[in-house]
Length: 231
Length: 286
Picture 1 (cartoon, one colour):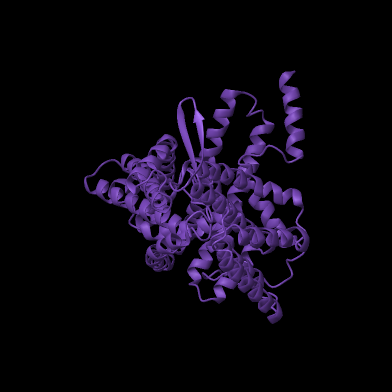
Picture 2 (picture 1 turned 135 degrees about the horizontal axis):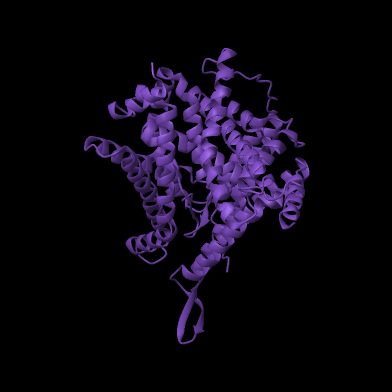
């Protein structure tokens, strides 16, 4: 969903940056708090960043001025919260713009809003609700990641429709862009969600202690932790 | 017999460095290498950052293709002649995004717009009008993107990411952000290294010699990639802790100072470009 460098008119680029800025600033505050409380979480945070980088580099050409790919930010939001996921997305988007010419520095605000703010917020919302109604973790992670991926693309479609209304009005262009995205993005979202479930299971087994001390997982998963470290 | 021959071909290809998974991601490690070895690597990173960002902003805000074309030519000249990056590598970086954006802009030129029909094509009873403003928009966007891309490549091919981050750190950006960026940057390359190692190992064991084997090997690769990378990352972190890591990555900051004449020259150039952009504002493209 990375919108290309120079594709957005400058006024829209500024608007999206101004909207994204305070949320990312809050994310930096959250990130410094988490790394102070759990310094051992740093490798995992950096790894989630690299994971987002690799996943969102697997792109297919799609709607004009953009592309279709998994985002990876949903899993980061489930583990570290949506604010930290937004910081990770900003870092990744800068690296991708510079190293892969994927996205851009002036479209950073717009891309952050879709991939780093709305997507993770949806993932976190689904995760919190799913935990409240006591669904199984795998189901919740699957739904959270798939919906966050699709939500990201809805936002990008809206941004593109606002910037370049191809089919006359905003709403017509929005449905038009959304329909093109749906072709590639629904299978990609399902694939990403399956990968996220596998990785989450792995993290619960391998880093259960860290996750429960960060209050990501609670009682039912503590059993898994005991099985791994029977002390 | 067939498999032996396959293995021979594959080994040769591996040693020549061809056919790696995710080849456009692998370009990042080559970019990183050029950032340290190019002819401009000794000059001040602050100057290069200032030049790249001012050119980028002017190129993106300009309403006609004139200024983006000047920006594209300037940064390409700087990349090829001042930094002495091989033109083959620069083309390798450019061709993929340029082709994508060219297709995009052709679509924009043909489908967008509503004022002043330029021509009408008769397609089996279906009339297709091409509009003047659609074509203008397509051409503008193409050159804006090309200008932006070339300045980004100038920055990243001449300046190592660590020096860019050090400059940003001097601008009072929170240290936790810089630290996380440095770690993420390192881990991206750990990811790529682990992936390449595993892919080579699989390929030498004939893991990609058939369609079914290919699927199986790919799923194994994906499944183990994350685990391996996390292990590698944890080991790095332990090693850093053992050497007294306290959340600050301290590096020797002997970056060359920006020269005042260079900064003044860049400002002058940027202002000239901005004036050119303003003067050519009402120039028609088509």
